[in-house]
Image (tube, rainbow, N blue to C red; front, side, top):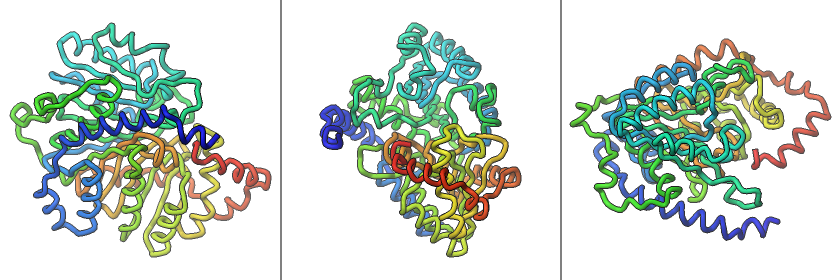
Amino acid sequence: MFILLKTSSANKKFSKSIHESNNQTLSHLDTDNGVLESLKNHGGSIAAQSRYIANSGFPVYKNTTTRYFNSGEEFFVSLIEELKKAEKFIFIEFFIIHEGLMWNTILSVLEEKAKEGVDVRVMYDDAGCLTRLPYKYYETLGKKGIKCFVFNPFTPVIEVRMNHRDHRKIIVIDGYVGYTGGINLSDEYINAREKFGYWKDAAILIKGEAVWNMTIMFLQLWSYISKTVMDNNEDYNKFRPDSRIFGPFESDGYVQPFGDSPIDNEPVGESVYLNMICRAKKYIYIFTPYLIIDHKMINALSLAAKSGVDVRIVTPHIPDKWYVFLVTKSYYPILIEQGVRIYEYTPGFLHSKTVLCDDEIAVVGSINLDYRSLYFHFECGIFLYKTKSIEEIKEDFQKTFPICQEITLDECKKVSFPKRILQTFLKLFAPLM
């Protein structure tokens, strides 16, 4: 079975096509060495982290402002306001779109904008929306004047490529406004429908030059799925942020949106997280819905904690998948023994993917601390250094810790023997979770 899957010709074709699309688009991202040099003056380790991300294809920017949202409700209000201002184009790429209050409200705005001549494009993951959208929903959107494509259409055939999903959450408006984070376009994310208690999530808004990275990320997969070729600067320049239209861009620290592809053998998301953990001097705080990690991550978290760094990880108290939650809890004892503090968000399900370090750097995006996010999915995030949103992120953590239950080693030892056996068995399937 392994040989059959490993030699799948469909997967080779898929990987080759994605590579060609990425190479075609990434060539339009240019690193500003002046910004990197400026960043270097703030500290060598910060500049090294930024340079690593830049070497993966995504440069760092100034001339960009940021705003952090600690709930889906706040994000939704802001999103509708910005969508209504669109004049040129709207790009939307999500793992999950689900008909309901949230999506229908967004869709009504998209319809109006399409009628006004705005270039509206939507891309969604087929597996993520398999039970959430009607069959051939892209045709429904097409009739409304909205260009739509499905990423990696689901087929009931065992193929490696089906393991690669588009888990990114990207919205780009007029090349000047960009959103990403953990929030999908479904009612539970704004608590209009209750599934697992209160649903806590996070997103970030950026405005300015750094949005260009997000535009390129979207166009990478769009080019692959739609089989369109954009081979000259004119095709790309119409999507660039233009200060002549929006006025001078404000500066808010250093902002670096980045993507992570499962087919380039470079685990960018994991490496960014590991670098943050290893450079922490005072603290590292992590929001993650899933904690299914390998030895590298365990060692990094343990070493940081044993070095005196305040390492705290917040996971859900009410899970969305019981088997994933069991595996998540199986990592508690080894981490707590090393000094890592584990919290469970008692009001409900925590879906945020946010990492904060030393009041200086943070990452907000779609990347979970599990095998699927770190190795198999297309993901995205935004690396932040000394932005105004850093303080907003810190405030979110500080308000969240008191309403969480801190897990102790004694509680971990109370797990029954049959449950420990089940946890050990489920760990065999960790790479599929």
